[in-house]
Image (cartoon, rainbow, N blue to C red; front, side, top):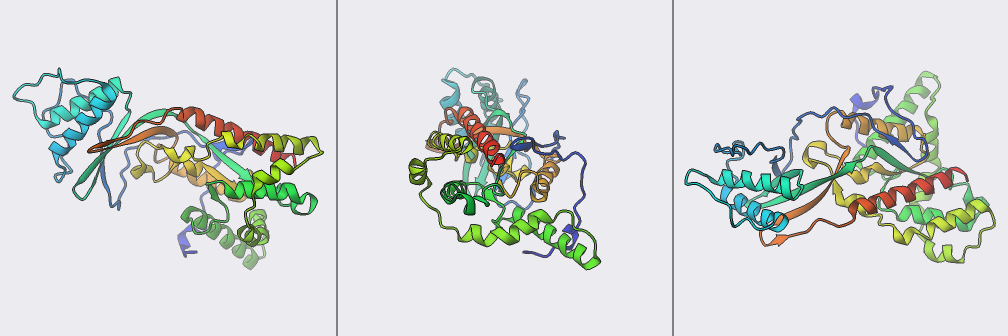
Amino acid sequence: MRNQAETRIIERTQRVPRPTIQSSPTVPLQIRNAKSEGVATKSFSLSDLEVLPILTKPIIEDEPTINTQALASLMVDATRNFSGNIDGWQFSTADSMDDLILRCASCLKDRAKINHIEVLQEDSDLRLILKRHIGNRSTIYCIPLRPIMPLRWKNRTLFDILLSFIKSLPYTGMFQTNESRIDWLWEYLFEEEAYHKKNGSVFSNANSVKFFDRYQKLFDAYELQDWKSLLLKYLPRKPLHKQIKELLLKADTIDFQTPFRIGTRDAYESMFEHWESFLIVDDSDSEFTRSYIEMLNECSNEHDIISAYAFTTIEKGNIQPFEEGLSYNLNQLEEFLTDLNELLRQL
């Protein structure tokens, strides 16, 4: 873990919410026009354009290396594909490539419901990222491990089913210390524990640290089993265990990869992805969880990490359609995890 002396004390905020059933909403956004630095891929935005009257001055003054003709060609391809025939458009001799780009952007916004267009350049290659707003996501879905661990001795079959299922999920877990955000949180928590031990004071947030010490090696060394086969053979007696089996039998109808196919308005500004709002934790109300939520709250005060967008990529000769049913799949996933979390709380 890296050494950052300035991160030992985190400024606590009273606005950090507590989970109720399975999750926590982040604080309201204070949207600013922040810019990312140090990103290898250059990007700029064509969103919220005022195109009436059509501007004649260059729209890309800070990117002189952009091939305007290539950009205009991509915009025309995207407009034809998502907005219909544009062959009837009329231009005057005074119109420039910038006018064509702006008109395409306006058409995509009005006809195709495109809310944001990113233009990316890597070397001499251009591509567009077209984004449609599909809703707001202010919830962190926490999947707790603490209720499952005692089953190792009480009900080994159910333990294997649940732990194998959760470990097979594609989301970030509290034991993934190679992930920078998780590494940073553990660095703070362990340094806080050391500080209190040194000063003889009470460390009130020790539960997450103790959980890590006790179960990190067990979780990492645990070999995944075929939880579906175990589930089919499992004959639970308790009503709660029967409910867990019934819910897990529906897992094949859930697309757990959906969060990886939605994005923020501008990933280069927020440096956050929506799949990071699905997290495997010790407990939904632990210090580790609260610190993670606080970190996202602080990020949400600077950038729009709540708005969720469907997106597609436009390259020369390669236009991908928007995914159908994305919002529905996301809702199904969130409902499934809500139900699972509620059942796990009752173990």
